Image (cartoon, rainbow, N blue to C red):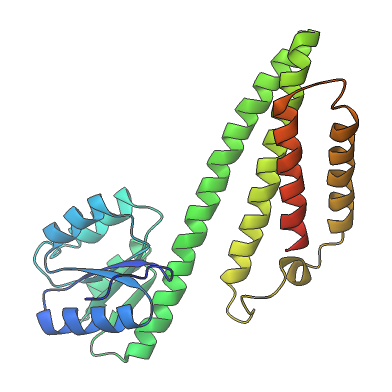
Length: 252
């Protein structure tokens, strides 16, 4: 069982049909996905508690999911994870329940693997984007708290606190600009018709990239000019981070 690649996403496949389970899991692994298997709802929930999956593919009629309790629990406990329901016994009741639970897809067996693969790719993209948005939101909240702390020190008007406040302010902005570019790269990689080597700013047509670059260059030059006034290892490290950010932008 080859599980050395999860670059395309992490999948949990839950089905009580052993032949379908093993063959489908192997096909997904061959496509570059990490894929674990479970034969009952209880086993699936246990694996979900131990691993951060991007997608759950679950059969409706299996032990531990007769009333869709697996799907209900998984959806509640792992809101960022997409869910695909599969069934060999379709009925109106389960189809309506699937819509209510907001699953990514509802697929009837037997199905063509290419169709499953298309749904898997779309569902994982949704999950990855959800996780990226959540991470960015949490980082922004952290950024606000850090800026409020700097604001407090600056408001005290103490010269001794200036160097620390200045360094922290530059550091926070450097880290967040880097994250912005990483987020843009991430979004570009979710778009099928864009080659991985495509420059982010070519895709985004960033009109203000030169202004951003010029601003960082000026910040680096200012730190260099004031190094004799403020002999600080912290400012030196911040200058290095800004210079690395410049390289990051030029590669974007």
